[in-house]
Image (cartoon, rainbow, N blue to C red; front, side, top):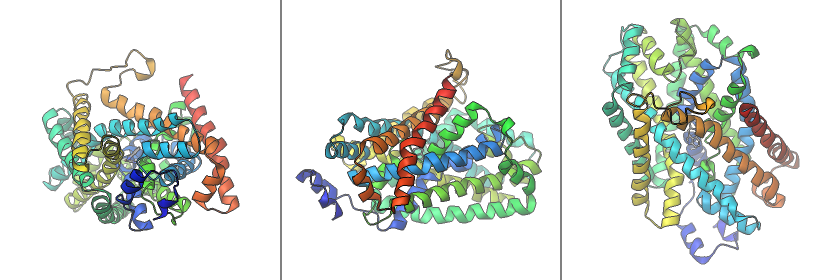
Length: 468
Ligand code: TRP
C-alpha cells in the first residue's frame, strides 16, 4: 500500500491504516468531494446572498475568491489529508512530526472538527425545511396559491418548533445512517447515486426558467457588475461563502483527501470539484432568478428566498407540483451529501481519539449536533428576540441561528483556511509539496506563490477592512 512509505508511522498506526480503505477510484473521490461541496450553500445560500448584495458585482468578487483563495486552499487541504493519511487532527500531527514543526498546528484540525459540528447543527435545520417542502409540494399545496398564502406556509413552518424539530430530527437521522455505514460502502454508494441525479434535476429547472421566466433579466442581474451595490461587508460575505460552498476551512477536504489514492492528481481533482460546485451555484441562480423576476418578487428577500418565492412560481406553472417536488428532492439530496461530510470529521476524530467504534461515535456526534440544532430552531420562533452577542455592534439583532451562520462562514472558515495556507505555504517542506502534487514547474509555482502570498493577504485584508 502506498502509505507504507511513511517511515514515521508506528506499527499500530499502520494497522489502523490498512483498515481504512481507499476511494475505489478518482471518480469516487470527485463524486464525494462534489457531494460535500454542492449543498444548501449553492442552492439556498448563494441565490439569497447574491440577491441581498445586489447581484453582478458580488458574483464577480465571489468568483475571484473561488479562484485565488478557494482552489489553492482546497489543494492544500487535500494534500495535507493525503500526506497525513489520517483524520484531520492526526494527519496534522503526522505532518508536524515528519516536518519537525510545532505540534500546535494540530489545533487547525481540532478547530475544523468543532466548526463542522457548529455548522451541521443549523445546516440540519435548513435541511429540515427542504424535507418538509418535499411533502408540502407533493401534496399540491402550492398550486394556484397567492404570494400571501405561500409566505404564510413558510412563516407557519418557522413558527412551529415541534414541526421544525421533527424535520431536523429526520434530516440528522438520514445523515447519521450514511456516516455510520462507513466511508466506502455508505458514502461512496450514496454520492455516486445522488450526485448525477442532482445535475439532471437542476438542468431541467434551468430549462424551465429559460422558457417561462425572465431569463435575460436574470442574466444581467447575475453577470453585469454594478459596483455601487457592493459593500465591504458584501466582500466578506463573498469570501466567507467561497469557503462555505467549497467545504473549506474545516478540514473536510483533509478528511476526504486521506482516502485519495496516491496516483491521482490533487490539482485536477480540486479544480474539477471547484468548477462543478461553482457551476451548480450559477445554474441555481439561473434557475431561480428568472422566476423571481417574472413574478415581480424581491431578490433580497433573505434566507427564505427560495422557500417563499419558488413555491409561488411552482404553483403557477404547468406541472408545477411535479417540478416543485423534484426541486425540493434535489435540495434534500444536495444537503444530505453535504451533511454527511460535516459529520464525517467529527466521527473520525472520535474513532481515533476515543477508540470508539463507528456506530457509537456516529450516535454521539449526531446527538450532540441535534441538541445544538434545537437552539437554532428556537431562534426562529420562541427565541427570535434573543441576540446573545447583541452588545457588539456587528452582531446587533443576530439570533443564535444567525450567529452560528455568521461566525462559521465569515470568521471560522476563513481563519481555518488562512492557517492552512500559512502552514502549507510557509512551513511545510517545499520538496514534500512538489512530490505530493507532481505538477509541472510552472503549475506548481503558480499554486505555491498564490497560496503563499496572495491567499493569506486577501483573507487578512478582507478581515481587517471588516473590523475597522
Ligand atoms: N459546502 C456545503 C454547501 O455548500 C456545506 C458544507 C459541507 C461545508 N461540508 C462543509 C462547509 C465543510 C464548510 C466546511 O452547502
